[in-house]
Image (cartoon, rainbow, N blue to C red; front, side, top):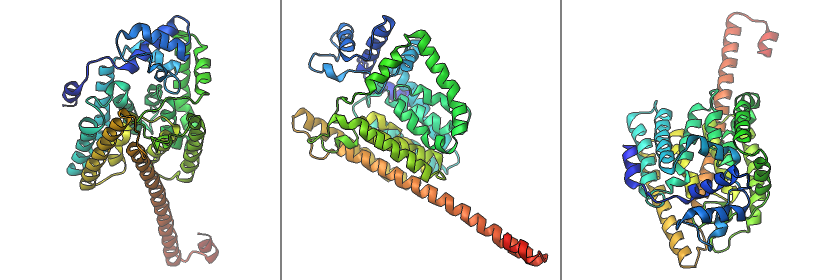
Length: 392
């Protein structure tokens, strides 16, 4: 059913992200630097052939922040196209929702599956929900990590998120802080394989160029962003705020991950991902598609899941349409509905992480009280010495 829905709604025109990556891989193969904006756009002009590229939108196409050399290796080795990537992502997403909710009652389970399907295919964006821009691929990998986060294979889906490395790092951050030795054992082999493969398949100096490109903060911005920087589309914050805001977001994620370390790892992982995307200055709507896992991870009841899901879908659709019309008319919004939506998701996940940590600590305290009462009872019953009883 999922495959049929994707095929029915698919826009078979060329997706420009893949044109950019095609240009980048050709440059890398030729020993040129795909992270140089002018070089990339010159190559893109050659291969676009009437596609999305024009001289007017030349500055929109760049590789920094999203696509380290390992991502180019993945594209070359897997020969993955936009449709295949989205089909795999959609199947992974719903399979992971099904696995995460396997112990729920039938009605809750159905709500947790039906509402995400509605969010994806009914309202979130245009006919394809920008599927070719890796929205479903990112969602599927995030879901796979949520399923595998305690296994030795948890590094796999995160390394496959190479086109959004800051999101992959955010998702694992809480687990890394509380179990850093285990995380290193599971991550290091995968990281070594990725870096080694990219150094073999592509010029090794591309990693240097990638890092250098990321030290600039001049990313373009769109009306569909859901970030702190775009809270007011009319009065956008300077692009120079990208890296400082990202640094502050990482600091918040690190602090709260340690402070709320008793929280459910999946809930706090989603929180860390939300705060880092929201503060990064780059968070298009398809970067937030993983929100379909919130109902099943936070264990919403069926009625709540349906009501909230329907409201969220309509708010997103309204924000998308209003933002697009205003941008095309040259009169951007004073307050961006999409950014408010991102703020709401981030705030909720922060609150849910705090509550999860608080509940976990209360359970530990309750267990300790039970142990103490049991010790007093049996101490009195079997005449344990007073000194030992006080120590207990």
